[in-house]
Each structure stands twice: as structure tokens, then as C-alpha cells.
Amino acid sequence: MDRADHAGAVVIGGGITGCSVAYHLARAGVRDVSLVEKGELTSGSTCHAAGLVTQFNPSPTMMRFRRYSIELYRELGVFETVGSLRFASSKEQLMELQRTASRARGIGLDVELVSADEAARLMPAITTRSLFGAVWVPGDGSLDPHTATHALARAARELGAQVTTGVRVTGIELSNRGAISAVVTETTSCPTTCPASAIPTTSCTASRRPRA
Ligand SMILES: Cc1cc2nc3c(=O)[nH]c(=O)nc-3n(C[C@H](O)[C@H](O)[C@H](O)COP(=O)(O)OP(=O)(O)OC[C@H]3O[C@@H](n4cnc5c(N)ncnc54)[C@H](O)[C@@H]3O)c2cc1C
Image 1 (spheres, rainbow, N blue to C red):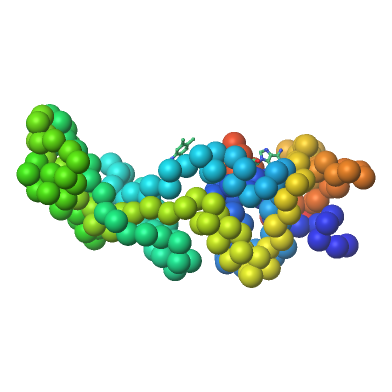
Image 2 (spheres, helix red, strand yellow; image 1 turned 90 degrees about the vertical axis):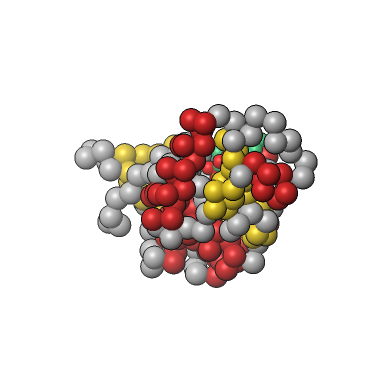
């Protein structure tokens, strides 16, 4: 049985999420990871992204995820560190930023509460009118979404994953128990079925089953 009709996991969609999922599955040791993209890599929302990558978030778990993303993008050589500012335009917003900054420090994130004047020094284009302060995160930055997605796809391929473009997934077949038994793709010749786990990244849902 070749890889065209068998896969350990099928990832549907070649945006930043799909390429990242394929990379992490392959890195975790899942064999025969197959990513299927109907167009070209980054032909969905990813090509519209501004590419800002920030860590500051009310949830410490999300901050850990985001910190890890930046570490990964740095490893891949696609990240540019420029720092970020989050502004408070009321006393209440400033208090909220203070609380989140304290949670951020709790997980070891480098964040600094700065005055309105300091924020204007860091970003001269702003006015200090109605500005109560800001949070400065020096490790935040930006990337080119196209370059980052292709870097993840390349890293996934290097770990043995197969990345196929120009093939649309047309269906997911379920077994009697409701487990995913096949992913159906549209090809010019005939549909291909892959007994596999299916991870649709296009709808941000995931479904896995152990390999048969
Ligand atoms: C204007 C704009 C600016 C943004 N700026 C930022 C930003 O600065 N920072 C940030 O973090 N986020 C930003 N985002 C959000 C970010 O772009 C998305 O969260 C991210 O790109 C989602 O990636 P994805 O891989 O989940 O989806 P997508 O990139 O949409 O990937 C889904 C892929 O699935 C493929 N597909 C769909 N159906 C099938 C099928 N049946 N078979 C095979 N393939 C299929 C599509 O062709 C597509 O390539 C921005 C979004 C927009 C629109």
C-alpha cells in the first residue's frame, strides 16, 4: 500500500495552522503524515495576515503557546523582533493591563508597564492625549506569513511528512463506530481514499483516531 492510499494522519489545509500541525505531528513521531491543500500553500486567510506575532494575553496558557510560537519561528529563522505596545486609554484599561502584566511575569514573560511619555518615546507617531499608560513587550515581533508557512512545510517534509497541493478534500468517511476511516480527495482521475486520522485545519476542528 503506498502513501497515496494510506496515511497515519491527514491534515486538511495548507495554511499556517495546517503546516504547523503537520510539522508537530511529524516531530512527535507520527508516521506517514499527509497534508492536503486544494490550492497552493497560504492560499487561504494566511495570505491576508499582517504577520504580527504577540504574546500578551489574559490567559497564561495562551501566553505560553504564543511564547513557544515565537521560539519556533526564531528557530526557523523567520521572525523579526521589534517589540509591541498595548495602550490603555482609561484607568480601568490600565488596571486590566497591570493585572495581565502580573500574570505574564508569573510565567516569566518579559513585560514592562510604561508611562504615556515612555510609550510616546518608543513610538513617536502616537499622541499622549487620553493615554494612561501602556505595556511594552520587547520580545514580540512580526513575520512574513508566506515565508513562515513554507518554512514549516519544509521542516515537516524534512521529518518525513508529505505535503500535496492542488488536491481538494471532498469528504471524510466514518466507520460504524463513528471514527474517521477515510479521507476522500478529488483528483483528475478518481477519488482517493486514505485510511487515516483526519485533522481539518480549515474549520479549526480536530479529530484523531488511533491507526488501524
Ligand atoms: C486581514 C487579516 C489580517 C490578519 N492579521 C493577522 C496578524 O497580524 N497576526 C495573526 O496572528 N493573525 C492575523 N490574521 C489571522 C490569520 O490570518 C489567521 O488566523 C490564519 O491565517 C488562519 O490560518 P489557517 O491555516 O487556520 O487558515 P487558512 O490560511 O485559511 O488555511 C486553510 C487552508 O485550507 C485550504 N482548504 C480549504 N478547504 C479545503 C479542502 N476541502 N481541501 C483541501 N484544502 C482545503 C484552503 O485553501 C486554505 O489554504 C489576519 C487575518 C486577516 C484576514
